[in-house]
Image (tube, rainbow, N blue to C red; front, side):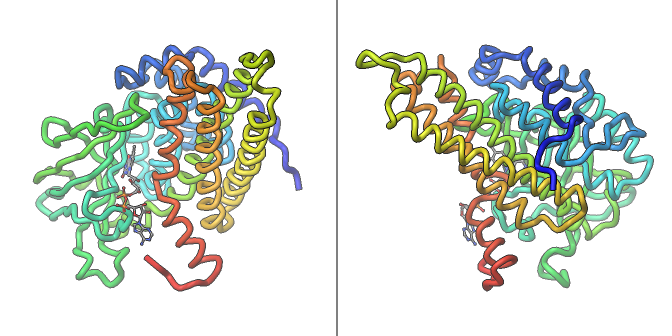
Length: 388
Ligand SMILES: Cc1cc2nc3c(=O)[nH]c(=O)nc-3n(C[C@H](O)[C@H](O)[C@H](O)COP(=O)(O)OP(=O)(O)OC[C@H]3O[C@@H](n4cnc5c(N)ncnc54)[C@H](O)[C@@H]3O)c2cc1C
């Protein structure tokens, strides 16, 4: 058993931090205030070669594992950019997995190379307003026509939909009622997101304002046959393999945000003098922060354990879900305490902890909620009746 990082992983952490250091608090504050995509950061990460960390080497990627991607995203999220920084790039690390595994050589060249080079961005169209977490109840339907499909339906929360060139789109090609199993009959496309033909309406939201999320309206949109991934009807299964990496990465990003917030809180507690002494001399200030350190530390290693299992092709569903649950809670707990440690100034934009606080709630909700994670663990690990 070796529970430390390898020298390659330490190097990844240091090199990613070097790129992130170019983008300070004022940069992220401005992107958040103006709801502006962090294009300069995205470009810098592309130029430094980080956007293809998990993608095949022959296409210009690094072919590294989810463990290395986790180290990278922990560094990104703890750099002050929080979820905004992470969400501007993280779909590259797990989203195209279905293409890597099930795409033809021609599709991989056509789709993955521009993603790795930062020339194209992709978004994820899975969630629907009337299905929610019950993914097999999606209604967006693709009808087979000459040369392709005609797609009609609605997607919800499509992140980066205002920026993306492509959408990974899950649709039904057979209604649920006519499928042998609820998970059958769904099909996955990777296709142009043509905003002249598809309405992509931005949703005003609490935080992570630099990265847009949208309600997406698709009406009789043509998707050519060459944009179909694998076989029709198997799309849900293709997607499944990227869900555990997504949970692990979102989890470790939450840890990054929490650690950033905790460092800011400890600094403020050392410097702020009230009643003639630093506030950090009070145990009422110290203990919550020390507790946060312990929670973040344990969830961090849970994330890396899940990543290690995934990279070693071992079952990791329960661990990846547990990692996301614990990490998101630990991250949110740390940002909450960071705001409280700053007193009134915690509520001011100037100290940035309120931005981290707003962004740290999101990993508790997306890509899967705490309730569904607990239901999954109850069923799969504890052998309790399925409740959803
Ligand atoms: C900022 C943001 C960005 C996002 N980006 C994307 C994206 O890019 N692409 C995409 O496809 N999706 C995206 N999502 C969607 C996200 O994955 C969903 O919001 C999330 O999966 C929860 O689904 P829902 O909002 O429909 O909740 P619902 O399914 O409506 O659930 C509402 C509440 O009820 C609970 N609940 C429901 N059923 C049960 C049950 N059986 N037992 C116990 N509790 C239950 C849930 O846990 C939750 O607390 C994003 C969401 C947000 C907020």
